[in-house]
Length: 195
Image 1 (cartoon, helix red, strand yellow):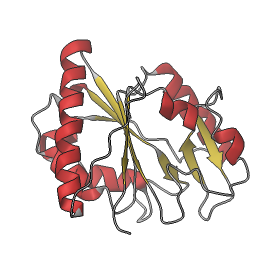
Image 2 (image 1 turned 135 degrees about the vertical axis):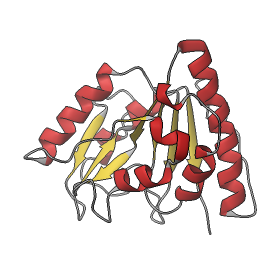
Image 3 (image 1 turned 180 degrees about the horizontal axis):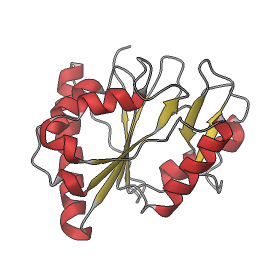
Image 4 (image 1 turned 180 degrees about the vertical axis):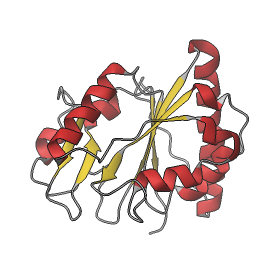
């Protein structure tokens, strides 16, 4: 979806086809932002579905040193843990793409709420996202905004002043962008694969 509210649906036969097409579109948008504004920013999901997208995106010739990458959400685990979305993105953005400025939420804080507050402040200090790429879980969640979550209505409020929130009712607990932060992006892409 673009800032103008235009919605485009693109269907492909396989995850690799989806990943390749999304990488072409995202690379063009990032390159255009770098050319016009001197820099670009993108928030990306974790999980296994986006890995082919990261690998495809890494092959595109962008001035990666001018691209800021963060996550749409993160688990409250160490950055090198198997469940860490940050670890997955670091492994997926290879070659020249490894030069991107990676600014994931930090999970080294003493509490989940402190981490959410620090990430919220970081997001507020940065320019709005040029792109947000979302994945979707089997239960319909995106970022870490889960159906039936304790604070879901607040976290889905498009007028919310919060950009990042703690999601304590998961195991492990998580940090997530709010819908308000996502909707501030120039473009939002939803990557879904499977049934």
